[in-house]
Length: 90
Image (cartoon, rainbow, N blue to C red; front, side, top):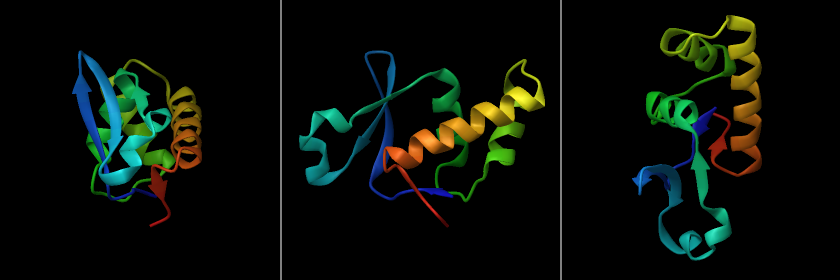
């Protein structure tokens, strides 16, 4: 999996927001707010191929979370990003 070209993480008023470049930005319902851990993962994998186990490992290295919980959270986050159209198969 890989983050699609044209999406960028920005911090606006202290909030991590994913925005699209170009005409897609006109539809403000497509702006996505990421929590701290999701923003951390976004930055860690931007421009790289990734999968759920890789994201889970990043979570366990950065946060006090067990590997099973990290894998569940990473898998769910990838599903959310896929449904939002932010990622593509690599």
